[in-house]
Length: 404
Ligand SMILES: *Cc1c(COP(=O)(O)O)cnc(C)c1O
Image (cartoon, rainbow, N blue to C red):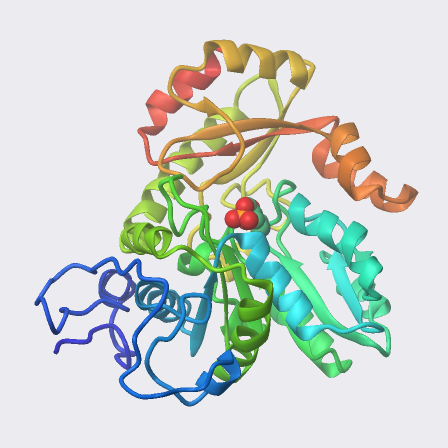
């Protein structure tokens, strides 16, 4: 049986993306991955009843613990990230919650960026305190601020780079080293925007990587999923607790779709980057545009860090208009023909959405005065978050420029 992609460290990324986790099915000889939807599996002998009894059992028992198609995807994800293991969840937020709830207990302190993906920002601000997990928020662009934010009970440092929606790039290597030296056990990186093609946070010192599979890795906007990637020993423990008890499992059907998407990730990321670079450059030269943030532009405040930390600048960019953003957004809803005015990102098709600074401050971040000023420096009164798809850059520009 040909089992490719695993234990073959010398293969290139495009080969790994296609073959890792995939194999010729031994019973049917199917060449492409079979979808196994079964929720339960008939063991060949008598086993225990609790998932804890399955620890040393290699087969499948019940879909909430593990299942064949999901496991194939997990192997592909671990290989793409150059990691020992991966676990797949029903969404990116489920994966994030699994590592937070699986690793932290009452009385532990979690150090978060003061702006990051809204779902996680709200989870950590509004929900975790109810469970006795202390959280505080710092500017992760500043190693000094991170160092000052670490407390004796800080067990986890959360990073997101580039950040949704500010496009800020944090220095994973510097911050992971600093945190570990100060006794922080876990450094987690939400690498959804970067993808494994651009950045490998584990090789820079992180302990866990989180991706929303709904975004670039799935890539087609038709399946939600999330993954947590890291050391096997850590993920086995999280599987037995967070996965089995919180139950945020990924449907095998979604795993199958995401696996199919992941196979073309290297090709797609090249196309995303090419079109995004073109649009970022056109936007920067247009008189209606006040500011553009794209890691590939020399004008990005962390461009030199981006060059060392990102092998691909990805397809995400934000921009500000001189005209009131709400008015421009209204024209986009009415006039755009190719780009969809919609949330989410990392899909084949381009997506754009207006994010107002006052709105997001009120709903989510509720920054203090100093952090609010810093946030506004990146956001202005608000930004358009543009997820550049894999369409032709000139066609996208012609669609967009009519709205300015
Ligand atoms: C979308 C997103 C998430 C959440 O993922 P879901 O699959 O929507 O749950 C987390 N982090 C970032 C950076 C995201 O863009």
